[in-house]
Image 1 (cartoon, rainbow, N blue to C red):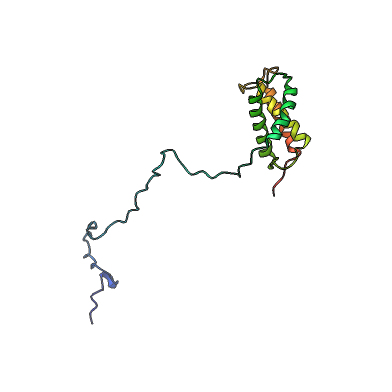
Image 2: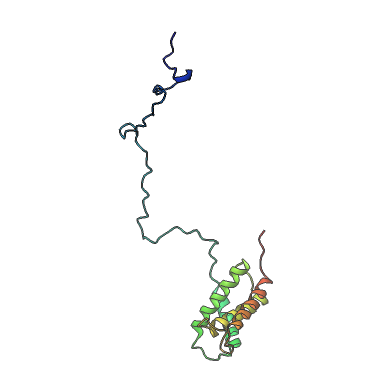
Length: 169
């Protein structure tokens, strides 16, 4: 029996027979009709805003502190700032709200339903006063004309808040 699948040297050839010795094989490119490339579908951008993206929040939003807390802290912040007029009360309430938000975020707790510890209260008063005195963000306040004063205030506030911080494991 003759085996038609035998190539040069008795090796089995699958497909085209082996070229005779000394001949150079010719490589034929595949035809487009035989091989169709599967391309992935084009990516469709979000049809909303070109700048929109999905953002996952890092933490749950904290409820706003009760108005009683801000109203309770307002006279203490005014006393710390030596203010006797009411012209800046709206601005001070915003600074107190920001300071309470910072304290709650730093300590990982909410003061909506629990009493404010004295160290946290002092930190909030100092931070709200700092926000009021250094509204331009460049100095440590009216009496301190160098940037190091701002750093010192933040260090003190953070140390006070650290005393009541909840540690998660």
